[in-house]
Length: 460
Image (cartoon, rainbow, N blue to C red; front, side, top):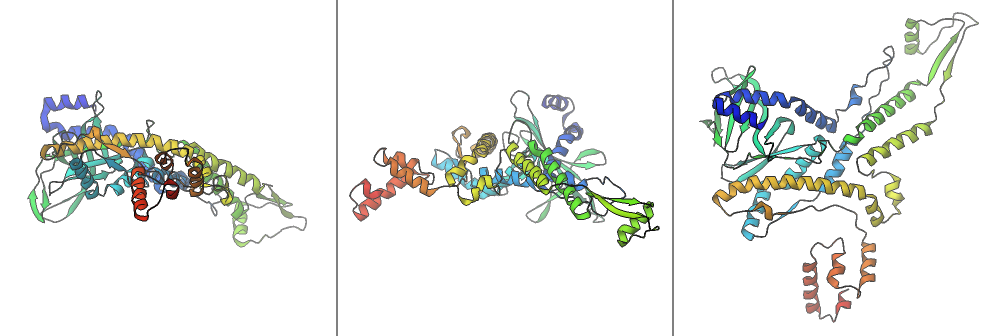
């Protein structure tokens, strides 16, 4: 259902038809939600090779299912590279800045961002919910994108409605027994509506909740205190694809090739039994495999093997090609490859150039994540601005700190060559390990005064 269709239905039928709308929205989104969950399951290790079919049904003794964690390596590498350091949020006003920093600390936003980045890269989407806690403070929590739906306006592309649904247990107050069901939270731009699935329908939740350790009636609907639907989403690209998507066929092919090769090694499937002067039926063949004994019925009978000559170097070369292509197609780096490590002989600066594709991929992901952060603070500031300091989301700046190798010897050589040819502040700005040039210059000035150094040459 589109946002406009929902508005029309609500205008005609009011909240009484909201349960039916929720059921329809979930049904319409079922295919996409299943895709997101399946993608995350692959990241966790539930990959196609684990359901590898048996080709020879008469031969089930050796059937390897080797899963190589490329998906996990790709996701974790990008996650560590782009989100390994806490995202810095800057605001020009001191009061607003303190409000934002307190929010980041209160929500443990560093870990929340890392967790959300993992979901986003592994599934193609991350989702976050905002709420007001009992102390009146704005809080944030990540939700499962496979259980979160946003109904967006076709014109503004902002959410007009949001839906979060999850497993829920209803307790019978008389018998004390619990029944497993689904609970849905429907968000519009003012309220939260709570529903419970009863049979095939969603009915309004009229139960009780715990407040301060005591039972209380559930307020339904309940105002959420934001001017927008308090859910935002984060995506890594416009393609609606997880980070490993382009390499999926290569990853599955690698698993299949390695599993089949190990089958050959463990059971000598590269050899076929040749019998002359007699016939071995299926029962005798299976008994022979079990006992490892062959009875020859005739002195003229003979049994030996016909072998396939498969070079291990061929298999190794094939796997190496697939390995390289997996990382190449996902813009990531095989850290164990000699092409990257160079046997320990390469400088950090040379390795940095080999990370260039990952850097470019990180820039794209960063831009899309900033878009999500802007929506996040648009939602959050709408609650802050009702009761406290005005915060303008357009004045926010986000800084991502990358974890790249730093070659200090190379940096020292650059400083040496440019010294006295460029201003000192320009030279320090070139140093990858210096974040705040003004602070460094201030510290050097104070050091010069303390130790009575003569000139800039002494500072060097």
